[in-house]
Length: 95
Image (cartoon, rainbow, N blue to C red; front, side):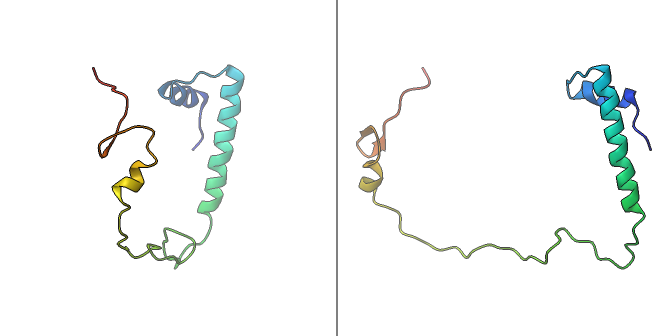
């Protein structure tokens, strides 16, 4: 299956890209070389090879949940540039 210049133009139009005729020719050649390489991979004997989602045998690397006490409101508000009572004061953005 070879990529044509017309297909490159079609994909470029969908992506709203414009290429010079020289770039279209270059991209056509590059895409065809990529497809040729993928065809070479299809020649490999993968009989008996289990499908994997990762090359290494990884399990979920989640850490256990730990409950930590929340910092005091006063400590959090100490870093606020402006505050009003126990809230951060920010500029109004909606009129």
